[in-house]
Length: 548
Image (cartoon, rainbow, N blue to C red):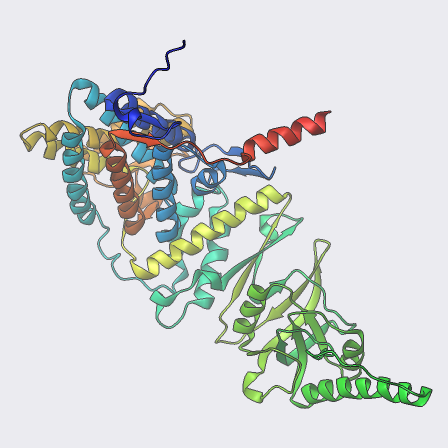
């Protein structure tokens, strides 16, 4: 007779297949190790000299980028603790649009230092308490480091915009930031509303066209559609635009009907009435003053024939989102079906033309006059992955513009702020009593990873750089940062490397919150995964079948 072992402890309460991990070694340290692994991946991509990662996702799409938000999105991380860091990075990306790498890497550094403290004998609660005190002090010091006079700025002044945007764009495309910043600043200023806090990032579009290089890129006031005009008319100047979301075609009735035709004459008349009806509709549109029809659906042969007769240009936009943007750009109201539009519903474009750029046929709708609500950055590049990376740099620039419209304060970049924060926090930790001081001291040490990583990625001696930064900051120069081009320490007011106050603040806050959340976990209880085929197993089976 076989004896079956009865489950004991917490396993006796749970269903079969549950996993339960508890205690410092099993839960806390393992969570910290997973987060450290994630931050190790992103850390080498920090800064202008950051290395690219080649990520191939489950759909076989290739990404070559140093943008941390894209990397962690495509990695499909499964570990629950590492996912907390990913969520913090996503929150940073949505709030500011830049600084996701700093969030993940700094949280990883905090957790690594927390692990050392745990091994020394500190309890996670004491570390969390120290970290919370440290972040309050960090916010206080960060506000003192704000560059005087940066509280107010003219968001329509290109020089001021570029100076605040340069650091964010350079971290993605080092060496090309001047060209990209100039393009993005122009595009953003064109579509900036009267109240800058209402700036909408969706109003700056990106059109990626293969061929040429970044120097061939330009700005279009209006929209660039990657499609050809439907008819033979390819150009219109100063035209009124009618938009029909449901397509330009004869409408079928909702009810089914039977038509009895007794003679050839009746058949002919039946066809003629349909023709006359379509002509009547197109004529009504032409009489309303519209010279361009934009269709959201199919364009019928007969309708197109009459559009040509009345010299009306026809465009087809399949995407309903793109159609909405076109309506916003032209100031038109979309009608559901083909009918005579009222004068108020018609939009207006200065010119609409079909052009060929690098072998791609595009339709460009321009609105050079004021009141334009959409601007398009036309990017040129040799490969798709280069264009994708350029688009990410443009997105970062546009998001930075949105952030500066809300809060234009700036702090020194190039690791100057981090070293100053580290120095002030160490002084604060020495004044503290109790076990918190060790956690605050480790929090201060965590800031050193920024200059260390920047120097390592640029191939410089990190120890020398950090030592000379501390020496400079100790003598009162709070703006001393790293000049990566010359490999020496320089005042950031000379190198003009500034970071937005909001980017730094949110990145450090989110990183601290994520680290404290991971440290608070002392037990992990995992349910057995639900049945059904697993995606990775199915993919492996598919790959095996192909090899056969």
